[in-house]
Amino acid sequence: MLGLLFVTFFIGRVMPIDPVLAVVGERATPEQYNVAYLDLGLDKPLIVQFAYYVWDVIHGDFGMSLLNARPVSEDIARVFPATMELATIGILFGIVFGVPLGVIAAVRRGSWIDQIARVIALVGYSMPIFWLGLMGLLLFYGILGWVGGPGRQGIFYEDTFPSVTGMILIDATLARDWGALRDAFSHIVLPASLLGYYSLAYISRMTRSFMLEQLSAEYVTTARVKGMSEWAVVWRHAFRNIRVQLITVIALSYANLLEGSVLTEIIFSWPGIGNYITTALLSADMNAVLGGTVVVGLIFVCLNIFSDLLYKIFDPRSK
Amino acid sequence: MSNQTITLRQWLLTETPESRRHARLAAFYQGWLTLRSNHMAMIGLVILVVLISAAIFAPLLAPHDPFVQDLGNRLQPLGTEDHILGTDTLGRDILSRLIYGSRITLYIVALVAMIAPIAGLLVGTVSGYAGGWTDIVLMRITDIFLAFPRLVLALAFVAALGVGIENAVLAIALTAWPPYARMARAETLTIRSSDYISAIRLQGAGPMRIITRHIWPLCISSLIVRVTLDMAGIILAAAGLGFLGLGAQPPSPEWGAMISEGRRFILDHWWIATMPGLAIFTVSLAFNLLGDGLRDVLDPKDSTS
Image (cartoon, rainbow over all chains, first blue to last red; front, side, top):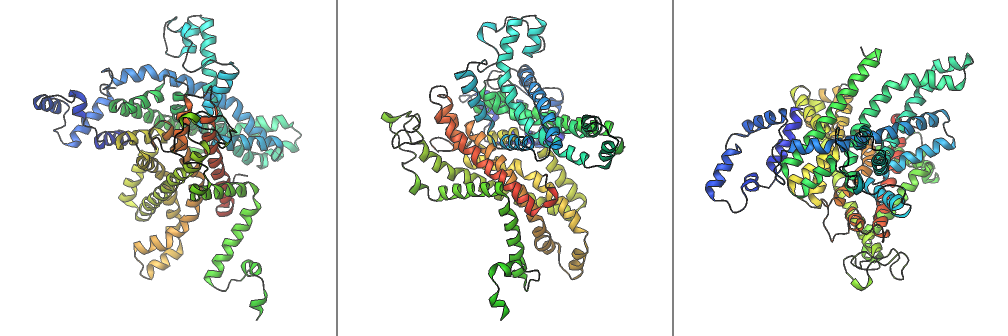
């Protein structure tokens, strides 16, 4: 984790923009410049600067956004729930469709269902996500009008109920504002299922190969010889043994959704962390970019550790 | 005499090669036969050959200059005479821009595919062979890079380096090398302790010679598979950066940038964003198909099907 901070710190230092100029502006006098220079601690050795940086980040301080002069951490706390909401619904979509698809593809290996699962996964690996999002908008919003357009809510529903968790679906439910709930749902369904599709591709592939491994094991043959129904063999015997591996895969693809959400959020004007980083980047707001990168990196690492832990807890062999 | 009567095919398929070159060619030919029987991989290969020739012969194939604007003729739909795929917001021919864009795509892919695996190979083999502190330090660095989601890290690098196609290549390469390093290290560790390496060392070969002449060649085949499978990811990352306006800059006909230009007109003029997207999809699909096929040939132990 320290290394993670080091990389962002390093990126921040090598970038060609002078941080002092960004603070004081172009027309500052040399005295003002020097004051800001000392203020930012740039006269200290790099290692000391790094220590300050780590200290700040540990205390949740990513510096001020150069664009709107608000603390970056506040901004991130505001946009993060939107990404959470999107990624969570996306991963649910991926699990609900991906796992059964993978299991069926493994059981009926070589059948048309297996072929379809293979094509779905291949297309998922090869499709540019931002383009698929555009096409989805064009078809379902532009032509068919089935779903809400970009953004999280229609304008009629904005700020009509209190924001408690920052996740609109939950907030609307808490406020018992069913119209707003339906509106928010129609906005989230397309980007979330898009993200879900990508995790579906990965999850179904992994499920399939895990299941194939289990189904060729001898205990499965034994169960079949005992005369158990196919359903019981597949779900009660084989599937139980892949649950742990599957959880790891799901945790990893949840982390990957954070990444995929950068482009998706841009397409759907979703006010989440990916959108935040990119906007900050285009306006050269370095503190915001690095803060966002650190947060995403930390979540990534935490999810990895989390899945390792789950593995240790649930798999008796690894003790 | 019997040597001259057998056909080339028989010569290639012989069980008893007569020279080192013969053995190498025979192995290559057998790999080719396996690959050829895989229809999906061949489709991928054909698409890529078409792409590469389109890039090479772009000036001959493109019906128009990709940069010439014709405002009187802007936003023409598909199938317009003289503009099969229509024209974009400035009246430029989309087909010509796609053909020229293939050069940029190949340029990015080729550069990344050269920088990242070689850097990874260097780091991985050195770390695996040297062991000790070198190994720990290098692997920690690799872990740090792996800890970031790739696109976000690439975004941060582009932010630091500045916008542009070379920087996009550099940013993607910087985020792409760690898996190769991991892989090369794992292979080196298994190779290092094998008997033939000890034999060479006893003959007096130094670490440089062992790494470059005896370890690298054995890592290559798994690297090639990995690179081919990664190509699709590289293309998507490059297109994503271009789409965000951080890769190739307009008026360059980069596919991702073309989608982003067409995005504003998506509801009324859908083809402007659709065509480059299809191009990206086709090419990355081709790399995935070919990569799967190559994996079956070069690295059968990882095969999933």
